[in-house]
Length: 262
Length: 65
Image 1: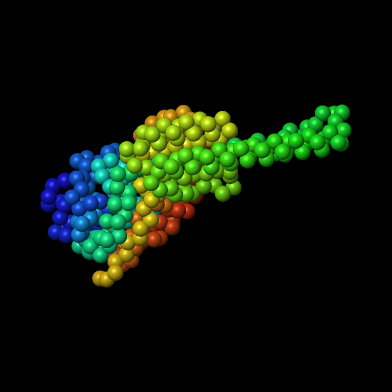
Image 2: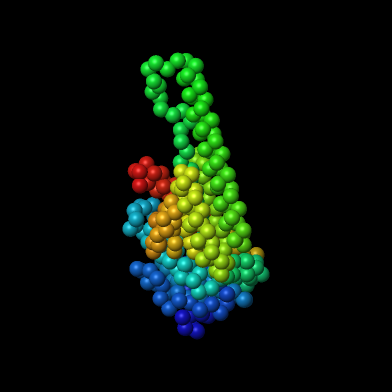
């Protein structure tokens, strides 16, 4: 990106246009030349103190009535994928604090003032995720039924039936305990390789574990290898496992930016 | 990006829509206050999108995909 574009404060707001913010980065961040998207956009850097925000100019109407089309190729999907693609591209070039989809700012001056007012917090957050990526490890147990087959042998006595049911329940409980221990062991192993861990949203009705791990780039290969081995082990316990990464540190940026004055 | 499903490692370019939405809407830094324009009220958009994600997710699970 050229020098003129990096001076956001000098930009004049365009009619019916606003800034769509993707992420916060260091002041002298080198923007990618092209956005890795089927819908290329021109990224600009708006600086404020020691930090900067990456944005593009958009028509706010792009964000209206997104519910009208939630298909895989709808406007919402395109906006989400474009946002994700930009954040990923930024994360591949340096520390980035992802900003939520749909964060619009009326003008570059307001953005610059926001960055200046919250610079201390932003620098701290950037330092916390610097040199790291997020890896998500999701486990969902597929447990065997505690009741087993409904049909019983025709000549089964009442006592035999009760004993069979008790054995089934005990086997199911033992299997559940085994899976639970395997999940905890996997989490402990992965946590040892991570700078930080956070719980991701899971289906509360299921026996599942879903954690995000903030992992240093130097340990990424080891983390991936260990996670793949754990995934195989958990699969033998009847679990479905999914490892995703490396990702921008989406789940580790919980900062809320608010202007103190105007 | 790497994704391992049941131990089998595959490398898709990008995740599915629901997973992508979950990341770009539910996580990351939030800007609040009078900085936001009102034409597309962000807080409202975010709330709507959360509901939307749940709807999409439910629809997919119901459809067995």
